[in-house]
Every structure is written in C-alpha cells, then in structure tokens.
Length: 160
Image 1 (cartoon, rainbow, N blue to C red):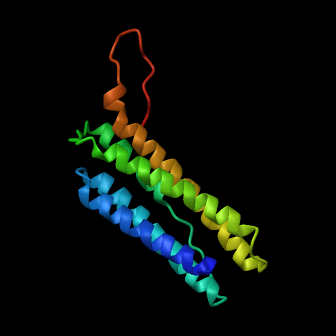
Image 2 (image 1 turned 45 degrees about the vertical axis):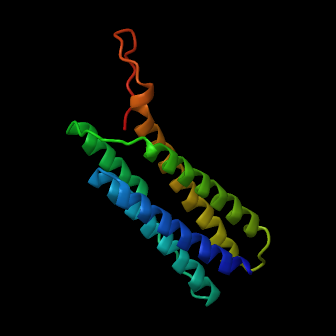
C-alpha cells in the first residue's frame, strides 16, 4: 500500500474513532470537541487526497481554541460530569493513535521528494501534535476526580 493510501485510511479511521467517542460523551461540550477532532481528520484526509492531485491546500484547524473555551465554560458554570471511567481509557487510546500518526508523518516526510508532499506531511505532523496535546489535557481533566486531594494545605489549582 502506498503512503498516501495508508495516510488516507489512517485519517478515516481517526475520524471514525472520534465520532464514536463523541457519541458516548455525556457532556455536549466534550461531544463538540471530539466531533471537531473528527472534522479535522476529514480535513487531513482531504488535504492528502488533494496533494495527490497536485492541488493540496491545507486549512489550519482551530480545535485547541474551541476546546479551551469548552473547558472554561464547564469550569465557569460548575458543570458536572457523570463519567463511567471508560472515557479515560478511550482518550488514552486516542492519544496513542495521535502519537502513531505523528511518527508516521515525520517518517514519511523523509521518504517523499516532492516539496509540496514534504510540506503536507510536516503540517499533518504539527496538526496531530495539537490533537495529542488536546487529548492529553482531556485525559488529565477526566482523571482529576480520581487523583484530587482536597486539603487546605494544597492551594494550587489546575486550570481547565
């Protein structure tokens, strides 16, 4: 399988995974973030398809800004989560998939000779790093009730 077909399939699989996570998310804000990640995977797939046709245009994503707004709204309005415990494992799996995507794109950057293809793989690696960072924060967010220790001696509060 050539690298473009593999990359297209990888992005399609990523979209499906994020849509699946979104369908299981309880909070509408988290659903929105996960659906936006899925939408980003669609954009990545389309960029790969376009570069094959020599017309690749890559749109910058805004998922990190949107996610930050969601977490701030949850914090501001005292939002509660009813987490079954499965979310953390699923989000950790998404982190691992993003890590593999980053590695794939960086490896392929060295294998292609066309400058437009190189630029695309570099940009995709950067985008997947953003997704990885977001999923890492989401893991921290859903895991914090398990690790939170309330005591007057501890005054440092994490911002979400």
